[in-house]
Amino acid sequence: MKQYLISPKTKQYRANLHAHSTFSDGKLSPEELKRAYRAQGYSILAVTDHEHPKSHFELSDPDFLMLTGYEAYIRTNASARFDRYEPEVHLNLFARDPHNETMICFNESYVKYIDDPAERANLRRVGSERPREYSVSYINEFIRTAAAHGYLVSYNHPVWSLEDEETILSYENIFSLEICNYSALRQNGEEFSCALYDKMLRRRMRVFCHAGDDNHNKQPLDCPRSDSFGAFTMILSDSLSYDSVISAMERGEMYASSGPLIHEISLEDGVVHIECSPSKRIILHTGSKAPKFEIAPKGQTVSSADLKLDPIAPYLRVMVIDEEGGIATSRGFFRSEFLA
Ligand SMILES: [Zn+2]
Ligand SMILES: [Zn+2]
Image (cartoon, rainbow, N blue to C red; front, side, top):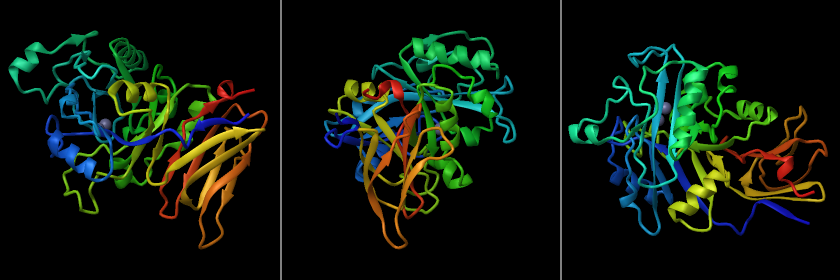
């Protein structure tokens, strides 16, 4: 029997799950961001300002959804000073409830963008407010607190953050890895973290993956250096309602891309069938040294492949690379999710 991991029948919505607005250090207002992203064919935008939990749900339309969330961070010094050679942790907190504006582990030195005294005074604060500490135990406690108060927590831009890989692999309750961060990719050329993601999957960590722009829009949208429209997440959802989209994310019904689209991944009789936009390579990763792959002859493209699944593969992850070097990747699907 054929099993669909990505069904061609499910609608895919283009999302940017990481954006900064004038509510922190971004140049565009949430309204301007919404307009710009809608004009580029997006249907979903999460405005995730630094340490500023703020719902922009009221800007949603029947054909455009604003997700609620914010970006939290933990640095190695208690004063939260930026040091370009020190590691730090950035987490996106996506609210299950569109009106959730809860601040996790409030710390004066981190909260720089809530200027309005009334907003500050009325902030709903939960979790320990002791000085933030750059340690695995503190960060795990932070993530646990966020998860307990209605947030899905993602781990952001692992290359930019300079953390040791073993440290990243010690974090618990991460719902998704930001496998591609366009703002950083544009700058460092390396912020597509497939090898790290495979390491998580090889350790049987149940983590999904997604991509986002992390745009601050310090350059105009049509400038080659612009940090918008470079990496996105396709969310597979029955509708564009807040509940339907956030539940799809929570179930991992999404994939990350800096270009190609994946139309179908299905499994039948031990063969994985993939349909995608015209690309150079289609690769089936399973955590082994020998992924199966399809490659287009010079000057041509491929848009489908049938790749045999290793019968002992613990998981599968489909990756597609297009002619411009754009990459799309599915999440890891574990053997326990496959039909027998
Ligand atoms: Zn960040
Ligand atoms: Zn950011």
